[in-house]
Length: 161
Image (cartoon, rainbow, N blue to C red; front, side):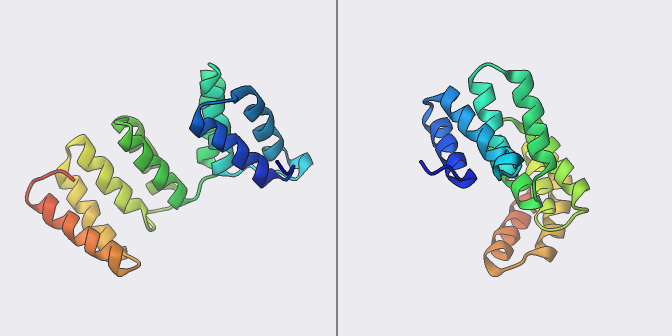
């Protein structure tokens, strides 16, 4: 391993994903986020640290670290994390992340997409459709536009996404 923050973060992430070597990985990620060592406190790095803390039964520390990670996240990172929570069937937590993203970034792309997904997952299809239409108007490219057109159609038919 190189001793630069990016390499340390990558090694710690690998350990977390492969469920091995948590304590050493925590040492690596601590170095990777330490500003004295040239580290930066990005969403990615802090979320790895949070995951490692959780795996080592330090839930309170893990939750606090994830909150810091979320505070440092871009709209795309928050959206991705919300999607990850939905995939884990953590609907309420995902909705809270989507709402935080929407409020923090004032409805900018892709926050309406997140609200659409969150409301669909909670069963509020009317609100989901409202946000789907707003997201469609913001779609930055054809791939997203086509996907959102399908979402609007599905939600208009009274079906969840």
